[in-house]
Length: 264
Image 1 (cartoon, rainbow, N blue to C red):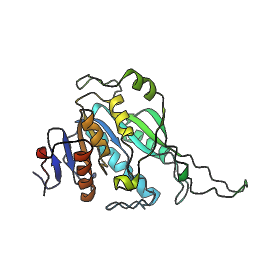
Image 2 (spheres, rainbow, N blue to C red):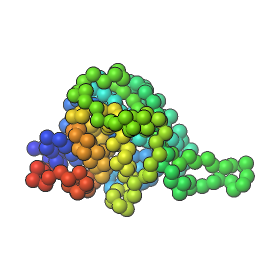
Image 3 (cartoon, rainbow, N blue to C red):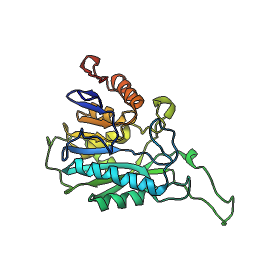
Image 4 (tube, helix red, strand yellow):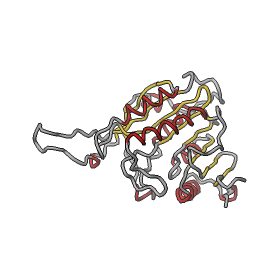
């Protein structure tokens, strides 16, 4: 087994490698990608520089988005969790810019889900206080941009859906409200709550499909995929986060330790 394969069994695969360099994923093999890439707002990751210039950040985004496009099946979907905008180091329209880059690469646009995280504490500045001279407007929301490769209608896979009537009615409303995840509880600087990949996986994939997270982090997408009977693949450059994801899969997803094969 190659050194970059941190773990692999019939349902799960963790690749400890750079998303831009790995050759562990076949083109046209992924049904759904659910990910939250680095936001470039100086979050203290172990192995990723989150302080690129905005131009460098967009170029990095173009490169990894291109890889994702190649990995997706013709009817593959992509749920991209990104900020609406950012205000650290200058105001930038991150959501609009990354959506534009994805479309330039070849992705087709389907819709945007607004995630109302409800975390008002993320407001970091008001600019000019009680004055029209230079006020700042910061929305406490994130986006889940829903893209696809060639065609929206999904014809591959088991064709078995597990989304309930109530879930379908609620989740097809493009305003989702649920809390974010605790950094301290998870042990990762930017975890997303399991509710996010759970909704994306049930709404946009069939049972048995293959779900990829190219920025696996603490493994939330893989936990959701495993619990929902999908195959999960995670790419993560930092070995410590691979170990954290493994611990969470054992504890939260209750994968059996005797099935594990952890690379050295």
